[in-house]
Image (cartoon, rainbow, N blue to C red; front, top):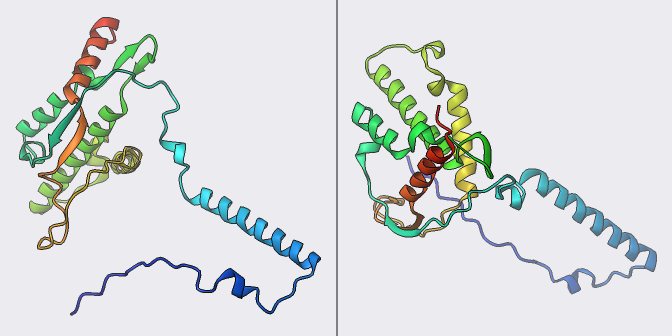
Length: 220
């Protein structure tokens, strides 16, 4: 069975110049005005249709208070770390140590008068939930056991996993990482690892959160 050829998208320019499209046609003033009105209405309709399908450009702009601290920018080369991808007590502990105390919840008189967290902590919580859910299902499948939704804790339940998948989708699109990754022709794709990125200093952010917790007595 042969593999289907990939679809190649090419730019479609004007196949007929505008001047030639009008050749041989004489518009009266009334017809010309009607044509302009039609083009205007069609353009407005197209614009409305596009805005209904695509998210607005400013959807990613934070509408609430933002954390305004000068996080240092650091160069970081991604490297595969199996510590965070398996299913063991060691892996669970490694994930726990990524977070500040209290899973990152804090209060702050200006940006978070009520108990809150930062989006990135929520996103990591979601990714960790997907990790746990995958290995739970994997281990049961290998053992030949059946699993019911009611047997799952809330963090691994289908509604929570669905919530997390879409939250991560929107988060990745909102904070688009435009680092270039070279294709490995033999592998037929990109590895992602071994590529240098420009990152915010993670543990500086964790320290800021921890100090906010200590200063404003937000612990529970």
